[in-house]
Length: 72
Length: 542
Image (tube, rainbow over all chains, first blue to last red; front, side):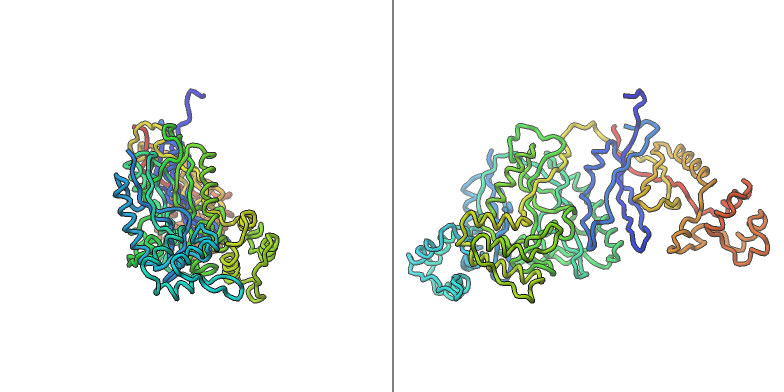
């Protein structure tokens, strides 16, 4: 392992984007940061139910973000 | 110390005077002594029998009512002077109509004798619980029905999304997830243009009380209803073996008989698979296991147990591999088992629900005559109806974590001004997280400055579909903007009339600009923020 281990935090993100009429609209909701990916995944309140015409366009994601000042 | 759990078999009211038993049980109360539990169970059983009237309202075929073969059940009735019904022209016995007609004439002791013979129609049981108990956080899924009305919840249970040994920890987890889930549903309603709707709990409340008249609460706002709740779940294996970070939960799937398209009273639709078999699934947690193989074993046992009494056609019709209704092979499977399949009138050939009713009625007539092999062969074909599943669920306190504290970090993020082809191409674009806001601002400003050298400030022009209002880009009045551009040589006096910059103009001009001209241009576009700072609560080790 490298001496200067990569420092990161993990952000739980909900995408509210939808694709309609050939372009995307919507935005992300940035919910909370966590020290590990597992903690962020455990905070997901279940993926959204499917809507009438297919898979939900909403969905949760966990994003790794560099924490250069020294993360957990 | 053992606890005695009073449970109700999972009966569902499917008409004014009709009930069906779905898989599983529902825990009602826990008692310290067996006597107390049995006393209460007897009281509830008597109350339920009084509501139901006679047991023939609790299933379509004799197989659903009793373990006795048909001839033995008829003998049982004859023992107390009750004559069984005469056969219909097709040879079947109209038990329900017969009982509705004559049960009023039965004496109390005759009626009790009938209940005793109908030994599969039992409403409550007492179970001794010795296994360790965990706490599951489940997500109640609210979804829009097909007919554009208020959102409705799962009929029972929900999607398990966390397990905890510690009740207080489970409640904290629920309290964290609840606002996330409420926001998500509210956002989904807004996306779908359905914000005018409310969330109507009626279906769930009514399903929870099959033997009582309940007045459900009125529809409520999306943030006023339960989205996440804590339910108890027992270990199904040796609790001395600790669970890891994930465990395997046997879940019985939820069934809904109110879907308006292809089911109706007494015919159910799997709530988990309404549109998409890969979609997140609801259900009711049954037991939790450390090993998947043990969970699978219980799943298979429960599946076989319920298949032994249920009518498969109440739950689904077989589908072809591409998910279409199968119209030809089901009849062939029934014929292959040595029976005459129901005749489907041409007019109903492609009408799903009436076809289901014909097949279900055929099963009710024929089930008592099926051998074990025939029974299994037909169930094998109707494999779409799976009543239990095994799901992997994270165990929140499955490993020791160092204590966490919450602090605000400042995240630098590219905004949506930078076009990226949609969120599935480049969705997040964080540059980093910083504890110090000033440091974050330096990083943001630097990134913004660098991006301006080659970034179009007007990405929306390219879509051709979004309004491109000048006020979104700048606080400058248009005449001031034009004068400023003329002064810096970006446009000529002749071009100034009605000039508004757009992305194509900028792309053409950009290679020919001096740095001072580019700076003058960006000075006007004071509302364009290419990078932003997002303060976000973050759980970090303390």
